[in-house]
Amino acid sequence: MNRLPSVIHIYCDAVNSSLNVRLLARYLGEMTGLDADLRGSLVLPGKSLAEEFARAKIIDPAREEQNLNPLPAEIEYESRLLSTQKPSGLFYDGFCLQEIFRQLIPRQEHNLKHLHLIFTSRLFGTFEDNRYHARAAVFGFPSLISTTGVVEAPAKPREFYLKRQFGQDRAVLKEELKGRFIDYHDPRLTEVMKGYLMQALFYHLTGDPFCEDKGCRLYNAHWQEELIFAQLGAGYEFCNHHQEILDQINGTQIDRINADHF
Image (cartoon, rainbow, N blue to C red; front, side, top):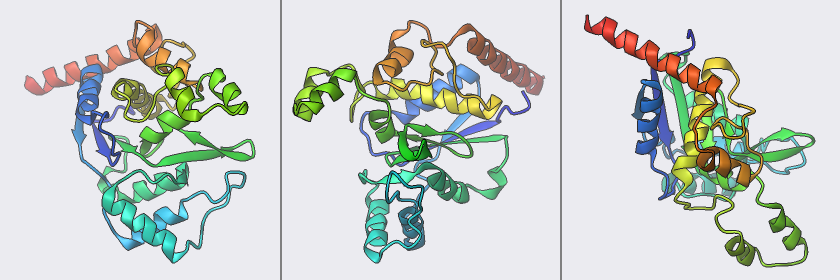
């Protein structure tokens, strides 16, 4: 376990009353034996930072093109967002956001002993197959997890899109299909986020955050119903293979504590 971090740092600028970050930190500790500390928001108000966020905004989802020369109004809007930390409704390049956050992390923590996890309400995507696709998470240094992305990135039930094509009201459909997808301020959000946290951990450990077992928390769900089953409905948390790795991590931590004690 050469890539086992000594500490996990959790940041949050996601304004969402149903997200319990303290519970998530406790869950990580219980599952791994690793220390997890909460650091609040990594971003602070500042015009230079506002300009960086404005540059990260996606101009056209069909083109991989940066907003290199944002307008003064765009920068001012980002500055206000930094002050209020409210969801913006904008769409950002996930890797550009990752680079912004990376530069804000203390230089002495730029190593494998530190795992940095950032919850954000900003919606981001990655460019694949000639267009940007919304993502719930981008893993790396640091790993970003979007509360907005969890709602918007995995597809809703097929009936939702079929009925929308026939002009049915979006709000009516959401009520009709309630419970079959994660929505804003959903009380299930914290439980669902446990899976994304563990995917970030396994990316740090192995470079592979996903599992093919549809009931494992590491399953890469593309549909909301897949996401809900993997995180809430399978009856178990991890497949045997990934549970063995977690048990090994916990055993490593226990051995280290015992060695320090004696």
